[in-house]
Image (cartoon, rainbow, N blue to C red; front, side, top):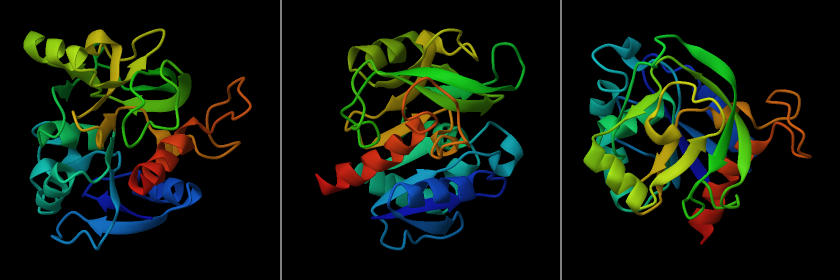
Length: 229
């Protein structure tokens, strides 16, 4: 499967995301934010970083990039789209996901291996997990606090749109410990932690599980199964 990884000015983790795609058995396709061509990809990844220096609001300028017209159209038609950290912020700014991401409650940048609970397994990016399964994914952000209006939160929780939830200490003050969301159709997922940094033994978190450090790989492998289905 061809998975497009989009690079914006200020993107940091595009090469890491491409490597994760390759390790998951897919073909990564580098895409540039200024294009209007998705080059026939089957899925899309919006990687982490600091697009446009996080000026205005994190992800706000990138959400207006030329290629986002195609991203929104493809997502609306059901293409699997994954937004990681800054990519999650872009998806929220593009109104493909609910709510928004703002400065961490402490005002500090957070970097640590983070425990997550998989809340919804019927998405294009979580179908290899069990509901309630705990995984460990690296986290690194300064503006990762998820916020939404009370009405939005009620809808998110009521419709089961939480994909991942923080376990243990909430690292950024996100409402309801929300670490990742999905859209109603389940093809679009955004999360603040970085699954592309948990795809190789020895280069990711160390856990007590037999698949130590590989929790992120299952997120990328899920996309292949979603497209095949």
